[in-house]
Amino acid sequence: MKYETDSKTVPAPYQNDPRVEKDSDGVWHVRGYTEARDLLKEELIQDGFNAESLRKVGFEGVLYMHGEPHRQLRAAIAKYFSPTTVQNTHMAIIEKTADELMGRLKAQKQVNLRHLTRDMAAIVATAVVGLNPTKGLIRRLDTMLHNSETSANKLASKLRYYKGHYLRFAFLFADVMPAIRRKRKAPQNDVISYMLSKGKRPIDIWVECIIYGAAGMATTQEFICVVLLHCMEDSAFREVMLSDDASARYEALNEILRLEPVIGNIYRKTPEPVTVKSGGQEMTIPAGERIAFHIYDVNVDPQATGECPHQRQAHRELGKGVYRSMIGFGSGPHRCAGEHLALAETDVFIQKLLRLPGLRIEKAPTIIRNDTVEGYEVHDLIMAVD
Image (cartoon, rainbow, N blue to C red):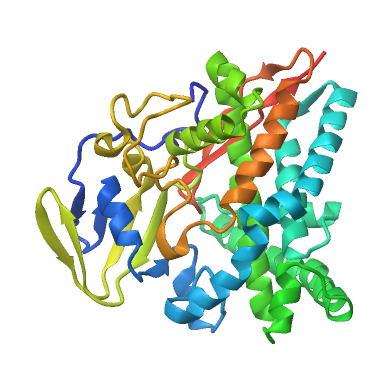
């Protein structure tokens, strides 16, 4: 992205560092695609996103589970995010929401795109989960997700810490508990109804709502903004996204995600020793070790991408078994369940947006860092239409 950034927020480009290495703190760092893909296929334990803290207090969320319990719950919940369900069930609300937001932009003539993408992602995600997407809920999620800035001031940090807890509990009592009561009376085809049918505790449903509602909203919100920026910069991508060729559009979307992953790093722990091949040698990572997967580096690994890994190509020839987004959606047992939903939302929203007469960037955005996901946030992208 060729836009102003707030300090050192954009990860450094791939510098041909070792593909797998262990640092002085005992953390293993993975920067090669094949190595990352092979390791992520293993039964590694999810780390990061406050996983350790939540496990200590007994929360059960699919993101933090491991082994057979994780596989069973993941398989059951995945049906709400499958390509078939997205097309047959969720596409109606995706189209309706996108049309309403385009109407808002046409009426106002000028908007902060961040607000539109926030509403788009929140309304769709909460519908799938089973929450009621009120203005209050959207505001609470938005504030909760962007309350992670660090500060050298101890008082400011402490206040932010308590504010975060307040927001999460406000989300529980104002949004999740009312939804649980509604679903107990009238179950629907959504995540909350399923979890209730399996006897899950409200506290576990709350954690799941944060994962699927909040996290899904944040990542999709940023991705839509970034796709729009690439389309406004590159006429070839714009033409592809306006075409009737759905396969070509999805290829382009995955290529952008490869270059601009919303989550910069993912972490795992080894429950038992794992072996990985790299550079013709085998390395064994002992049990109990932490592994950091550097997504920005992995996704521009020239051994997997071919020539010009840093250049965007609407159609990129990739080797057999190489995901088009590389590990932009993760990989293995913990691969992002909302992948198909996020791509569908982005595809519909971008197509409708690009077709608006006189669409232009009135004010270029500022890209800042999100410490929670070690990625980016697109702020103050002001779009205008005739």
